[in-house]
Image (cartoon, rainbow, N blue to C red; front, side, top):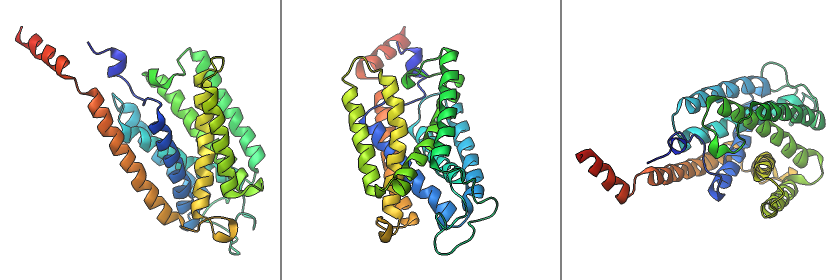
Length: 285
């Protein structure tokens, strides 16, 4: 008999494929967010509002779904990555020449940004994320994502995802723009930190749930630095592939991975020959 937990599974198993898709989605979130806010010159304020509304729509679809659907789940991850990119930019940047290139004095309609800077912005986001985890802990619900099957559990999960993606963007932009490491150096640093997390998985004293959330935050700056490396000009250390072209390629890759995950999910959810024979035998009784 199929268990209730497996029937109601709403979130994916954490495998290597999960992390590959997470990095692809966060890299696309960086390039797509920059495409709307900077290339199309909609500005951080308008783009943040539009992308947050998209996030709400995709989240409602995910929450209303009765079982795990890779397209629903990864669309929400992508929308949090895009919204996180522009929320971070709006918090940390302003209309100074440091952030607006080509002699531009403004970017889109509305406030150009709060100009908090990366350290202050990161401190605020870390505080919000810790508050979410505290509320999650006090609720008594599990942190194991494969066991989250309730509306409240999912709401806490997606709140943490949105804030962690925004925090990861701030970290990635700091590494790329202000640390002196550059885009490639920042990506290599984060990759090294992720390798340390993989090694710590073999240490019984370190909870895997803690490693998951640290890894989830760190894959966002990896995506941010990788996205900047793809799109920024050669003079700034990027490949100058452009936000539109990079976003189109990454979107195709992500949809290909989602289609593969959907096929895998269907194969694993279909009953095997023995289960099907038992079902038919029960129907004849």
